[in-house]
Length: 391
Image (cartoon, rainbow, N blue to C red; front, side):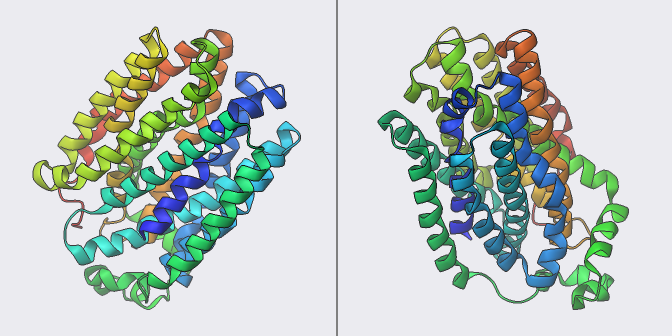
């Protein structure tokens, strides 16, 4: 599972340092770049809900592997996109594959967590962040060294595809429900796989709509904060503060590096203090970080602010998905897929909204919206159950 999380982190992060160059090559304004990048979460919304049915039919591990391989095919397409439309379509396909992979690998990770009997989901997301940091650094280095974009992204696709294919042999086998006997007892059709795929998703929504919405709000808001570093840190540092190309890529790297730290220690903190308290404290820390981003007068302060924001939201996404995957009467993959689908609304809305505000006022004001999301997440964090492994 660790390889899938790492590869998933590397995939999108490999593109991020190239966004300023893509913006210049395609002659885009902030709004155009934001809309093009938002095609990724739009693709996730279009097909992400299928992760639950696919996992029910093929198993979450196989679904995640196939989704990862499909996503890697989109990297060369992003690299050679000659127009805004081609760029948006490539990002759409990348986001669609990522949504299926993300939900399926999280569902599979929760199966592993139930065998451990304690919180380990944050550690899987720490490995995702390690991949994102590595991908961001490699991308920033490629930009700084003048490596052709198509060579860099195509090479990454080949290497990562080989890693995914090798890792597939170590996944858990058998139907996903075997780790949740109480749910199987209450829903025999689900335990035998007889529930039709679409009925499984509808059942999840009907069984606990408000729980799903509440749990999904945290990864959604945390995703807005996280995405601000991915979508806007490089542009903000370069265009607003005049940072060099390599330094401009460090805002995203700082956010992901600190997310690694937060996720490495997150499971121990959750086991000791409870998920709600950790999520609330982290959201407030993220708000402080975004305040430093908005008010920071020099690149160093802004990079540090993105780092604090990444540390603060480190546990929001995994804890929200874990809670959705443990709702009684809902198959794990269906709960995770629905919550992940709702969370991607934040990824869809945030980039173009920030871009519109940036063009109308400034990018500082656009990023101030992200600060507000961190504060809202602090208010909603009390919805999380203290024990992420319980139902």
